[in-house]
Structures are given as C-alpha cells and as structure tokens.
Length: 243
Image (cartoon, rainbow, N blue to C red):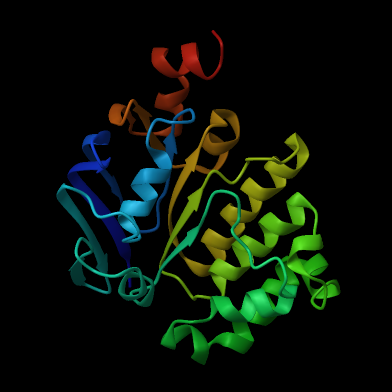
C-alpha cells in the first residue's frame, strides 16, 4: 500500500540558533519531491528532524504507511527506521574500514528487511555491478561515485517505504551526478518508493522530481506543483539557472 510524509509548521534549532521556521511540506504516496536550497538553508536539518536525530521545538511530522498514521516526533531513530524510513545522508557516512558487503548487510537492520535480505542483496548487485565486483573491498577505498552507489544500496537493504536522500550530488563529477540521479529514479520505480530528495543542483533534481519546494533561510519560499511550473518560476530562474 501507499506511503506518504506530511510535515506541518515545523520549527527547529540548535541551541539558540533557529534553523527551521514554520516549515510545511508534503510528499504524497509514490511521489519524488525535491527540496531545493543552497548550503546552510536547513535542508539537512529537516532530514535530521524526520529521522529523529534532532528533535524539533514545535510542529508535526506524520507518515502514513499501509493506512496507519504515525507521528514521528518523540520517536527514536531506531523506531523511525523500523517503520521503513531510510536516509541516505550527505557525505554518505559509510563504515570505511568494513567491506562493501559488510556495509550492505548492516543496512538490513529492520526486521522486515532481514526477511528480504537475499532478494535485496541480489537486486543491489544487479543494479550496481561494481559493488558486486568489489564486495570484499573496504568501503573507504572506493571512489566517490562508488561510495554514493554503496550508500544508496545500503539504504535499499533496509527495504524502505520512504527514502530520504540528502545532497546526493555533493563531491561528484557532473557525469556521476547524472548517473546517481538516474539511479534514484530507478530505485523509486522498482521498489515503489516515496522519495524526498534535498539537492542544490536544480537541473538534475528536476529531471526526476514530480514537484518541489525551495527553502531559503529555513523557510519554504516557494512550492512548485509540477516540474514545468518550477522551470518557469522567477525565483528558481534567478538563483538556480542564472537567468
């Protein structure tokens, strides 16, 4: 069944430094939604709030999975992961001294995922043949693009229903950025995922996004109801396309 994410009037801070101000957004079932913004505008903070890494001051984060609604605020990260929500963090955050295969197996921590471990592992190897070839290699010795593949594959091993991807293009060449974005689209379609992707690269993100939001100084400055509408928006044309 379908999975969705709804964030309402979210405020978050690090101590006295306010980062998110009255943020509301929705990712509908089966959608890919882009959260666009330059560094320091709150994209990663929002991801941390969803995953229970940072507790918001006020607001609501609700997921609906198989017809059941779950408020995430107040839950531990482990509980949130167990609902089927996976994060591909900025910078990948792999275990560099463990092998590719060990990193993948650690991704299958959720009870449901353990039951599907073999199928998911085979799919990851088929989707990312280089990971199969280098399954005994230490994750820290992979190239940046290969590490991003591993981070995506590790999230897939969780058997997620909702996938959060934070800044997938960071540190990658333009060609690898394009391939990574295409892979996110493939994974979404193959596993019928609901995807929220934060990204600075508007041109790449909008290739696979159904719609999106622009976050500026911790507030939602613009909501685009379609990719075409976002392409025509003056704010985006000025800050992302240089027009």
